[in-house]
Length: 391
Length: 98
Image 1 (cartoon, helix red, strand yellow):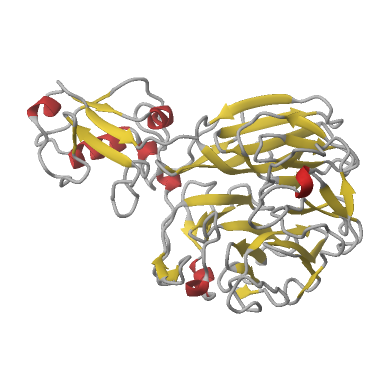
Image 2 (cartoon, rainbow over the protein chains, first blue to last red):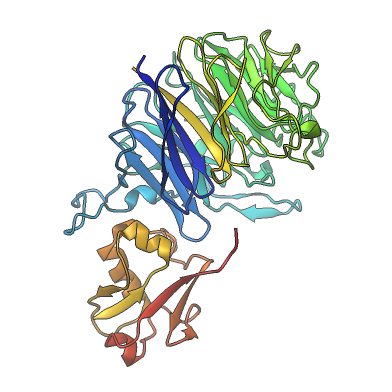
């Protein structure tokens, strides 16, 4: 094990944090793409030097960046078919930034707006990139307004998997942060089985590579929507999977922490003794499929930790029984948030847990949550944290 | 030679410093300038106007001789001072804090 590389997306650029397997001393690189919102960045499991980045701006739209050298240099991978890959001056071309809904595969209808009226579907940004576990050129992108895209040429061009919108898309609604497809889980044993989650629509599953989709929200109960047990419309914040148990998923919903053991056919609440079960992130220990982590947030109206104490909660029993992990974390006057894509785990033998805050801290626990140390403390608000375990 | 002033972030994306100078055949219009900008800097496709619709992105404005031309027809001919490069064509991002 030679080390880890933590990929941090923030409101004002990207940062790369690298360390050896001890995870005590860190090198910080950045800001990359300074001034832009970096919603997410993630490395290919097949080729760790290949990193995909969603660089976005309300002013200037969506840009996809890629590195093939572990983040030393970046380029936009796209170019129109049949044309040179660069301009005569050596500039990379911009086709990779083009996300166009497939209206032939599924009509572009409307979705529900905050006031209950119907609203046109409009592309805004890429929330999440998910490289395939088998092929470094195959990558998925979850976008706002919610849809799933894929690229089979390393991010040069993107095509929507449109049938997802047929899963009652007109009933989907944006959460406060927008109607983003924020979670993409790929079954490592079955490339045709994918789980995704959308705010505020819920979780969905395909078993045929995206040709058809099924809402998987049975057991979710949301008192803040007209039908608390509706098939779609739940504000799922995050789902997580351990690759060795792909039928078991864990969910942090707007309120409630839940699990399923049959790939989403039925969920049950496992909030147990959590002091509050509102939150955004959830993740699973790399080597213990029943050990899970959440960061409880006070409420949907007050997005900060309860009592000003930043606490990660760990369950070693797959839910219900939770313990607070506080060593090294601020236990007074802390009012940051931890967003849905801002927690991850590494594959080191003593599993490392990482999370970033809206206050600009990125914390690492090199011992499964036993103690925490800030790697950096003054970044812009952290939107996403991913880690690569380098061999 | 037409002169175009890009916002900071688009200059970074296009890897240029200062004004951009472009050859644009007469009649010079906003649409012709944007075509030339995107041809010269393909990575800016979609950042000024949307990919499919060609609509100006809502937080950007076009200024000509200190006047807002954002809502003028894209094929409307621009003043001679722009066409001859005496005054630059401005693409401006809306101001926001944070």
